[in-house]
Length: 181
Length: 126
View 1 (cartoon, rainbow over the protein chains, first blue to last red):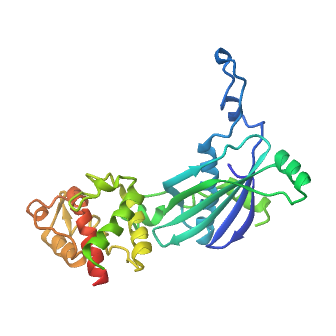
View 2 (cartoon, each protein chain N blue to C red):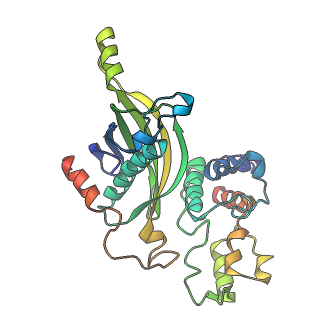
């Protein structure tokens, strides 16, 4: 999973999730790895593709929840992405997904990403006397397809899919349960 | 709304949905062949047209549905005369005149040009 906890859920409208970026995550060792030839040390930055994946999982759960997880919901298109800030170990990412439109075929979802840089934020809040805050990272526009209605027996392609829901498996259920939903 | 105003809004929708340049969106440009549209893009275009023009588009109203699966409408990769009649009845904004001389199913998508969408919007607003 690329999110750690669901913190807010308004059915068919909005879902907010957080992810804590940890230096224990293996991909951070390689992105960006040390470059001895150029005299550069390792610079661990969360790859943007995984930030987008976290946003997509947040949106996917929102769209799946709207139909009681009866339909297989897949990410069909990422229309636009803008990420203005890197996430580094120790940051908390916050993903906010809102449904812009949904029908039997699919949904368009707007994603907004913020981060909390705990050290900077803590020091700044002490210095200014104001509470800790979130900094904007960027936005992701996504489309999700209700796969069964588009490609399945009732849809255009008439394909056979396995019975049961093969998108929202155990890991999604565990995440929701551990988040108190 | 004039035809130019409609084209302007349709152009904005297609630039946004298909990540193409404005000058590529000419009236005769085919959505699939010239602008690189894939199946999910058609759903995206429908959503964005609804937002841009403030009307609701029913499933199958702009782009065809449930034709390819019906053996009465498609045989050996060709759309039958019943199928052509059904398409014409459901999609009055589409110009079928050239295509119906050789009505291949896999060429149906090429019928959809920027002009087709402009005509569809004109009829909806009409």
